[in-house]
Amino acid sequence: MAKIVCVLYDDPAGGYPASYARDDIPIIASYPGGQTAPSPKAVDFTPGTLLGSVSGELGLRRFLEEQGHTLVVIADKEAALDRELPDADVVISQPFWPAYLTAERIAKAPKLKLAITAGIGSDHVDLDAAIGAGMTVAEVTYSNSISVAEHVVMMILGLVRNYLPSYQVVVDGGWNIADCVARSYDLEGMKVGTVAAGRIGTAVLRRLAPFDVKLHYTDRHRLPESVERELGLTFHPSAADMVPHCDVVTINAPLHPETEGLFGDELLSTMKRGTYLINTARAKIADRDAIVRALESGQLAGYAGDVWYPQPAPADHPWRTMPHHGMTPHISGSSLSAQTRYAAGTREILESWLSGTPIRDEYLIVDGGRLAGAGAHAYSTTV
Image (cartoon, rainbow, N blue to C red; front, side):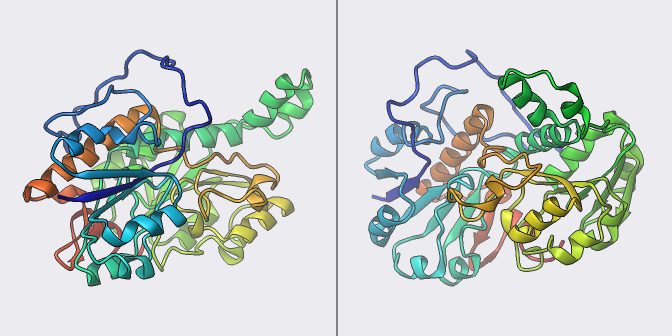
């Protein structure tokens, strides 16, 4: 029998009421491009409820315990994780509350055979160490890609239209229209570029096209000419080539050695003064202190995102107090709609692994001692 350790974010004291804002959610059967949504044999949860927290347990307890397996659910990513790892067969965590499976931790977990990301983005797992240990690493590919794309569009509009400070004027009882509009512009006509045009980046481009913006992108895999023509895209061979042309830049790339620290002082200095930068990818793609300097100097007009390092961010993290920001906790891919899909996908992966049948290729990051499936596309070469 297997021991499954599930690292999830905690619930507040007292938990949540049984009532949610909505009684149901649309059920998504397939994604753009034809990949089907997660399809486990069954689920033991109500779609549209809180599943990614300690109380929700990703809807896994009944399924696992009825087969004699042990499910341990924790929120402590340090002491509790280290205590449970030595005899764990499977570790499940989320990008929003990542269990950092370092090479040192993997070395101390001789039974560990499977790491699952409930969501997308497995850079919290040392993939080289996982390969060396013969582990399988899987994530629920595409489960929350559109969720993140929607969050990006929201943040772009929030910054460009100066929404958050204007909202605060209302909360504070004021009516200072001049202050509200002094930093408010139309998105229409602006040049918007994405660093990477994979599932999320392309979804962002598609959602922005109706705003009559001029769309730019860079990616190691150029999109089909038909897509470029349909969306009116301008391709650039690198981020350095693209960003000087843009009024808004959104980062939608995976974190690997070639993207870490990409948006530092040097690249930021080449951008137009007053550019807006959105980062829902990974915090370490941007240099923390360079972002603060760019906002303070006016080189950046605004920075928004929901990715931090480490996560959760400490109370004194400078991104909490820097000017003209629109930061949120890491929530872009964890809407209740997305939780329904990534919880179902996590169960689908476990069903396959526990029965000894192949895990969907789309879900695989590491398998058989090498990068595989989605991992071979996302983590093997540069943006």
